[in-house]
Each structure stands twice: as C-alpha cells, then as structure tokens.
Amino acid sequence: MRRSASLGPILNEFNAGKSLARDRKCLNLVTECSKCRRKVFELAREILMDKENASHGFIIADGNHFEPVRGGFVHVGLGRVSNRDREALESLFEACFASRADEQWYLWKYQSDARFDGIGLGMWEAGSLIAHYAGFPRLLVCGTSRLMALQIGDVMIHPKARHGLAKKNRFARLTQGYFLTYLKHRDTLDVETARFDIAYGFPNARHLQQGALQACYRAADAMFELFWRIDRSPNAHSLCAIEPAAFEHHPLMLQAFDDLSAAMLKALGPRGCWAVPRSLAYWQWRFPTQRGYQWLVIHKPESSDDLLAAAMVKPMAHNPKEYELVDWLCRPGFECEAFACLLAHLQKASCEYLRTWCSEAASRYFETMPADRIDRLDFQMALSIYPSQEVANQIQPRPANQGQEANTDLGQGGLWMLSGDTDFR
Image 1 (cartoon, helix red, strand yellow):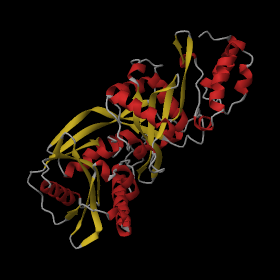
Image 2 (image 1 turned 90 degrees about the vertical axis):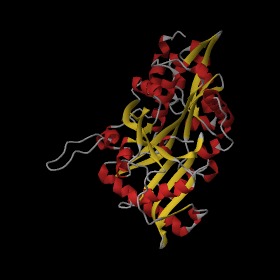
Image 3 (image 1 turned 180 degrees about the vertical axis):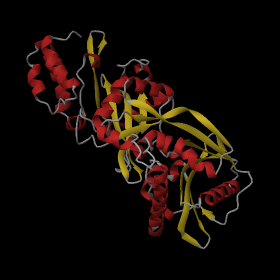
Image 4 (image 1 turned 120 degrees about the vertical axis):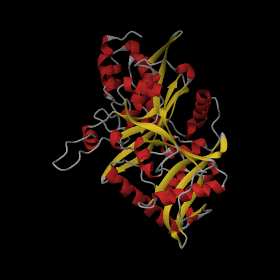
C-alpha cells in the first residue's frame, strides 16, 4: 500500500499511540487525502459507532497493519475481547491446542469474579479472531512495597497466522498493543485502562525469544520441578490434616485462612520475595473443586480453628497416583512438621509422588523440606520491560548503605511462585 505524503501526519499521530476514538483531529486530516479517505473512514466508523470498541478498541495505522490480499488490503485490528466473542475465542483455542475448551473454561477465567478475572485483547483479520493475549490482575507484595501486576496467559496465535520471529509479526503487534493499553507508560493509549505497573508470565523459549526481540520481555527467574517420594521415611508430626467439605463458607475459617496467608506473606518479605497475597476469596476463584482441585487444611488436634497450613493439591491427569502441589501456605516455624503431615495424608490416599513447578525463590523455601529430585525446566519466567521509571526504581537493585544489604531485583530476588501461579488450567 503506497503511502500518500499527506498521510504522514496521520500515521505519526497513530504510531505515537493516539486513540482514533479520542483524537478527532485525525479524522479532519484524513479529508486531505482523497485516495485514503474511504478506507480510514471505514475503520473510524467501525470504532466510533460501536460503544464497546470506542471504550476499549484502538487502531495502529501503520502500513504493516494492512495485510495484502488478492484484490486489495484487509484491516488487522485490535480490541477488547468480551463475552460476545466467546465462541470465536473457543474456536481459536481449539485451533491452537488441538483440543476443545470445556464449557466452564471461559466463564471461570473471565467472568466469575471481577477482582481476578482475565482481561483479553484480540486481533481480528477480515472479521475473524486470529490471535488473543490476556492478563490476569495480581497484586505483588514484598514487605511494604506493592505493585499492580498482570499475569500473562492464554496467548494464542492461529497456526495459519504465525510468521516466525520477525519483529513485525502478529505476536509482536499483539504484545506491544496489550502493553500500551494496560501498562503505565508515557505512550499509554488510555490512562483508565493502564492501571498496571508490570506484567509477568511463563512463556516457552520461543515466545520469550520473540518478546526479547521486540523489547517487551526480559528473562527473570529459572523454573524448577520438585519431586517428593511419598514412601520416604516420614518426619514426626503431631498435626491433623482434613479435607474440608464446606469450611470455605464458615466465617471463622474465613478469618483463620486470611490470617494464615498474612503470616506467610510477612515471612517472605525478609527473604526479598515478591508474592501474590492469597485469600480465601482468591482460592475460591482460582481453585474450584469442580475442576479437580482438592483443599487440605492442617491444624493442631486440639484446635481446628487455628490453621497452621493449607495445601491445594490435584491428581495428575496422566497418573492419579501422582499429585501436584498447586499452592501452599504455612505459618513460620511449622514448615517441616506441616509438610510431613501433608505427605502422610497423601500416603493414605495411595499417592506415590508429590510434585510442583516453582520459581527459584520458592525452591529455596523448600530447602528445609528437601525434594528427592529437582529438575530445571526448559522455560524461564518473563518480566515485561519496566514501563515507567518509577517502577524501575522500585524493583531494580539500589546501592547498599553501610552495614546493609542491597535491595534485590524483582527477578533475581524472587517471585515466589508455585504450580498454581504458573500453569493456569
């Protein structure tokens, strides 16, 4: 598509991240270029006449976003994915993973609790959804520091729309568009949607390479898989483990659970670990029992209301005798005894192995509960390139004062993550 000289100001406006729906002067500039007037007005009308698109959509008016097809060009647009796009999203899922999403998949991840629901951005070509990128709101806490974060997930590019590792491929456009929309940045497209400081995720090596090539991601923590044999010599313990049928609805348990979570979060702070605060509400949303998750709470025999630990486990699909440790909370000082109680309980359930994916920071936490085997996984955690200087100053190392240790980087010092943080299914 040959660019007319009079289109230069318009393209500059768009490439600087201006929203067509808000920057109406672009429409006036369009009228100066009769050759492109019809095409741009069609795109403008598509946005401005639809309230949902006007709120969430935007167009990057670059020649690379008009894909050549026989007889002309077709518009490639980005916009917020909503419930009306559910069928298209599930079809894209099937095309990418060669399996169908179950009936509750979309409702669970995107429409069950506004505090945690995913925020999806789609890429459409000729009216079809060809790619999707989502983030799930997470608060990251380290001591008294707070960051509003997005956990990246459900990144899908239709197999027929993939173009290797080129800088201007669809994955690049989608990633950059998502970060411009939702991360705080001087070129943010909408200050109302851009309420997050940083994004993190667990891409495969190829996607991490693409993200680094585009200056969107950088590699952070290594990831590991820990294995514990259940028939190992058990450590002594005097605790009780129960599978609560309805404890999550009991008001006393609500407070006890949140107190347990707060105690563990406080203990992780001095380690330099950034962690997502757990709560009973978060567990209820993230680990619904109808999806195979099993809740386990550990307490002293004489006091069932005083929770010492809580575990979320799930039988592995390929081998029901292997369990996955999906999440873990424990009061400081009870780690070894509570973990021994967990292993003893799983042994009664005929479990042979317990395993978990975890970040480097979390693997160090389990050193007092040593695994029988530790494997380094073939992917790393990825962090978005710091979108603002304020965030960069907060999470990058700062020089140590005399007699004090330097503050650690978010990646090096520790995102505390287990399987439930990494593998969202």
